[in-house]
Length: 388
Image 1 (cartoon, rainbow, N blue to C red):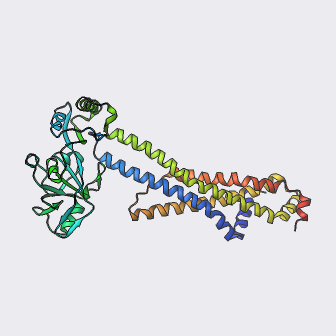
Image 2: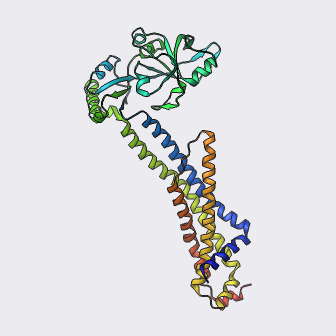
Image 3: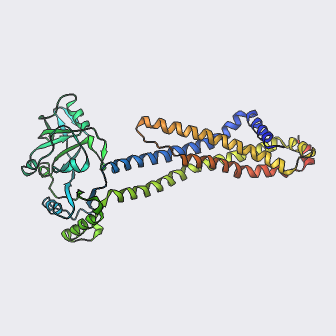
């Protein structure tokens, strides 16, 4: 029997039992679609974060003290600025406070106490107004810069420049509004409010610093600068490197790629369980098919069909069934992934994942179809002909 004829017979048998075939393929379709969607969302989210990190350039270092027992004073920022190959330094401190204007309150605001270099280092621009100045910092001025979402919440279409908002009931004058930016350096600038770091005292916070950004003058010497900052922190804090971190964008990207690979394997592994379930379903249906077609097998064997012919026939049927399920699963997975982008998710389609999914469906057809095919091939023709 030629392979083309075998495939035609396989398709005919699958079509003759439409409902059973669809239900059999359903498990495989769900498994394939789950792998594509989960891995695609994982890769999409990772790529989005990577793009944000890369957009900041490769001349930025991030330093953080990882224990609450140690911190730097604001005056230490001037000493860091005087270190070799450092152009700008921007400390940042996250503060909790109630934000309001009249009867309107914003619950999503993230208040960041920083200095005049913050916007330049994080590549965040102003849509209107001015930045925090050195005079604001020296005078502990009660001024602030609003993210675009906060400005919309509190002022709607009105111009906020020169108006006042309340932070913990204290009046702060709005001096600027940020352009719509999204997430930058791990912070959603659209929902942020920037204030001078020295003004944190008005909100019950001190000016101790545990995190800051550094912009280097020569990015080719960024590794050397990283070590210089580490040495400074080690000598100033009098602690080991276990209590602080200094990282570049490249090291952050390397760490993210490692996490991305692990996450993709984890999500793919979880979704692959459905593939095994789908394979068991195919084996179950093929065993039923062997039982139903026992007499047909006996007739074919009595007319000269060899074991290998029967084996190939049922194996091809299992393979066709699994490949159809795989193709439909791939199509469904891509459609669902693209549809999820309308709900704020980032989906990245991967040709490699699609290829692996297709190959997996073929392997499942072969692996789970071999036992039913072997069982059909070894039937005794006399016993098979007696089967009613």
